[in-house]
Length: 388
Ligand code: GLU
Image (tube, rainbow, N blue to C red; front, side):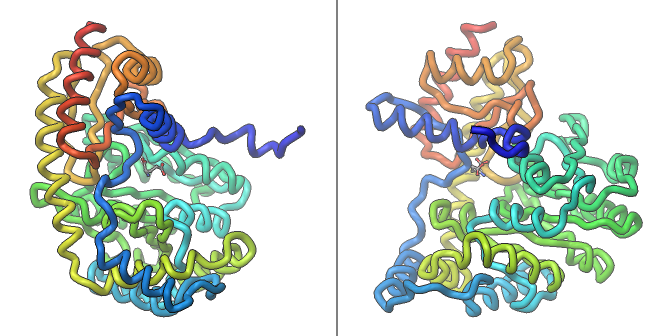
């Protein structure tokens, strides 16, 4: 069959593919240690599940507004104001099928053929593919460990052209776990305002911070940057709601209106009763978020120490999210070969850095239990020793 040309320009998501492979191996009875997809191992907190179950019982099973349940849009606007200092109303918010879908809606609403979107690498693997699917040009700007895998304001200024429409900011970052300092966010905001381009801030990991790191939402730094900011976020990571598929996009009302129009012709509303779970997530105690963060913090310490104790690997300390991004270059292996051999020979699933435009690295998610971390790191150590 002759498929649309755009299909030949994108690859399937490797994070999802490797996670699915690891799950299938487990289902076949193979003892796999999976550090693949960034998916918290905790169950969704009980009060969130209860709110969705109640909504289901009450018959909240019908079509709702494509933009999302009014009560949830309001709760999100309130959260953005109280947590992030962003002055949005419900009309500035669309509820989407996860954070990924909010970004996809954004690209469709914003990007025209020839528009350039600046993406610092290592990047989350779906960003460039979404830009390409929308007909835009992903402008990849490599960064490395010397700048903590962060784009500097100077470098950002250099790569902006008259065709630049959008800059993608992701802090805390997937895959590196790095967090931009408040000063760096301020300097980047100034570049965005001076160049009069837009920024989308992917804040899905905003709650998962360590060692006193802070999250500053770029749009909170003044009215000029606020007008040029779009926020993408969701419930998956902070509330362990990955399978629920509830996310959101917030920004200027005309842009949000455009995404609602797109959504009305594609997915319609997000699962109605799932949205009631999301309302409970925002309106109830946030202790569950902190409990999970503390568990991630312990795992982070163990995994970082174990990785850096393996001769042949080196890993920078991440300040947020739940990923480690060790350098594997001393093994002489390309990241895909490394990951394939590791899975084949030792049944450990990790994501090759090539998926994030960083072939000298691999990504491990530590959103998994301590026993798996200990066992998987034993195996990883044996594997690396066998290759040195
Ligand atoms: N965002 C998570 C990850 O990077 C989940 C998988 C995906 O959507 O890519 O692992």
